[in-house]
Length: 141
Picture 1 (cartoon, rainbow, N blue to C red):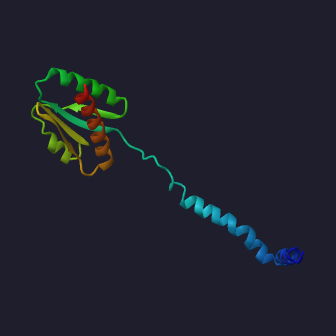
Picture 2: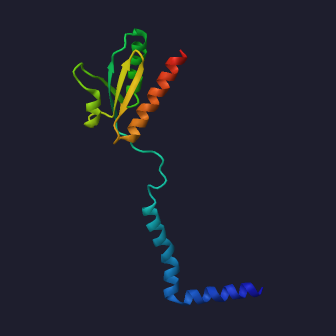
Picture 3: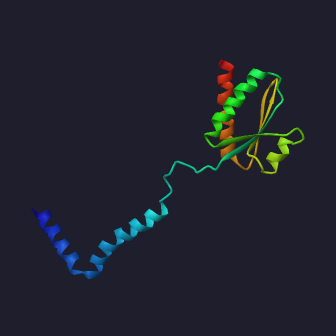
C-alpha cells in the first residue's frame, strides 16, 4: 500500500509542475516524428530496378539452342529484361563499356559468354541469374 501512496504523490507533483508535464507529453511525440522520418525507408527490402537492356550476338550453328534462346528472350521481355540483337559490325564489349547496355551475351558453339557493366551490379546480377537458370534448364533438357 505504501508503493501506491508514493506513486500517487509523484503523479500529483508531476501534474503541478507545468514544465515537466509539457516535457512528458511533447517528448514522445517529437521523438516519434523524428524517428519516423529518419527510418521511413530503412526497412524496405525492395529496390526499384529500371528496365535491363542486354545486347546479344548469336554465332552458334546449333539451331535448336537458338530456338530455345529466342523463347527465353520472349519470356524475359515480360520481366523487364530487354534483349537486342547486335549487328555484325557492332562490338558488344565496347557497347557495355560505354554504358549503353547492362550486359552483352555472346552465344557460340562452345557456350555462352557474358560480359557485364561494372557500374550496374544489380542489373548484372539479374542477367547472370537469369542466364544461369536458362543454361541449367537447357542442360537438363
